[in-house]
Length: 234
Image (cartoon, rainbow, N blue to C red):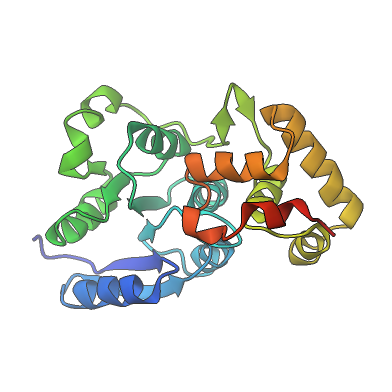
């Protein structure tokens, strides 16, 4: 460890026990200070904007706004932000998506804890960092300047930020009125976004949207208890 300026860190993780563990681990490091914590993606965007931490440790699956969209919004606001993804998923598809978003690193939660502090220091220095489990097969192929546009791309389709927000709310089981209240838009606007999502993704029921959201890591499978209940909107 090099002596120098303290690295400020924000934790974006909705599971309390995981977040407490991360905080405890980082508090033991003399050169790292946790200055903020978020439990949802929208909180992460707000706190990142207010505190401007040196490094943001970001989970992917979070309520209200997932970590992918939160990452996109944070980098749109501050292209120099250094975001380290911490996820339970190690599939190449997930790594590729966050790399396209502009994240500076990717750690899987099964990685040994000492890699977290190593990764934080590395991304703070402007480097990229991947868990050993994914670095050999992926990082060498993508050692290049990162694209910071970061819209969700699937089936050659790009979703707007608002469509992404509505998509996640639908997949989490929200009815149209609930989504409208949560996002501060009208029910008609929600319905219009729902129709556009189904047309763009060529998925024509809510259960299909939910399965797709789970498959692509937008939500965790545990979020949706009964998919069929989500079919009843309003």
